[in-house]
Image (tube, rainbow, N blue to C red; front, side, top):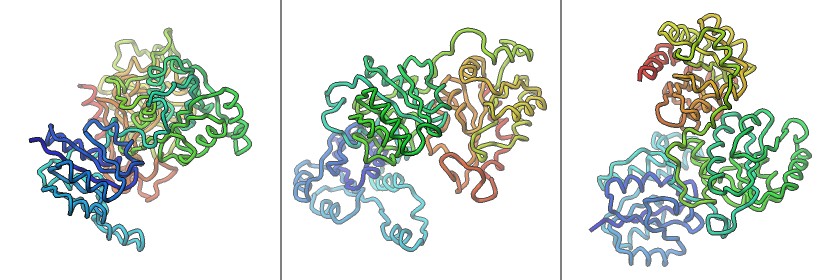
Length: 505
């Protein structure tokens, strides 16, 4: 007889979302088991997208919950809540096999109240959940969330996925950095497929307008001039009036700032979809969980769950840069002038970054370029206008080709020529991965857990395992600890060895 497992988690939205690896592990151990989850009604929706859950039991009262549990004939009870309510259900449920996760509530209270640290607090909540499976002989799978593990956090009524009318005019708000904007493109591609008749507009800044220009998934670009006419509250009001005149039915907001949500509200856009962790979450009509352990591309795609419950990723989701326009590019001309023919094995190196602590040392990039040239590869130094001097120095001293200052269109056209892209954690890294080019990335202050690692198969990240990482979401101007070991410990030998292995694959 298949096992019937009851999982209890009566806490907040974030705690409920983090239970997903538990269901995956249970299903791996007992493929034919039935999994039910007892959860607060307001968080039941977030579990509806999980393919491993057979039943969601909304907790209405202690009496109702206990009656439902006793009548179901469960064989196993996993208590991931660990309070008096769940204790009473465990005690009177009559379920033979019971396991409880170690909450370590006292250690947590001592840390919050008095700053007293304890080794038990170093474990992630997901790891604690998975440890509770060990008494049953269930081997824990990877403690990470995957796309499809959860649904919409706060459905706003009968809406789009519930059978309501699809919006005719949709606004996507993304006014963050280059990489963030690039990782919004898959969302736009899927949005076009889900609502083919809708008019899709994107609001972004002058610096990132080029990311969306010419895209077949975008009908209009609205430029948010944050530092001039749209700055401050008067500027936000001016921008909201502009948006209101467009008559948008729905706003999809990957940008988690309060200003983005406020502008959408002031523009009187009736449906406003964003993340539950957004600074302006209270101004949204629909909220989707934000999971740090997932890649940012997948987090953004989750914002489309209100359009289609149970949405799944494409097999080729990691490749989403549309082909560059035909014809010779500036980059091709400069390569030809340097004697780099179409059959040359070309490696692009991006040594710059907007954040100083994200930059691996110039001297080490130089030595790497020299070694790659000595190995028989041609090296192209790429970068934006602010990287011109850096690229010029590296190219002149290594024998490489200086391609700095090229446009985004030129950079996209260059991708078809590359055998490998070596880079810091940066926006161009996402252009390469989205073009299907293998990426070797050097990560210092940031980590893959922040969700901005090279997305897709075949890529590598070189990094140093340090307790102080990550020190910030985007890096910073200087190392907070003063030692900068996250970059110092990454040697030329380490990066060169990885490059040779990837080029030889």
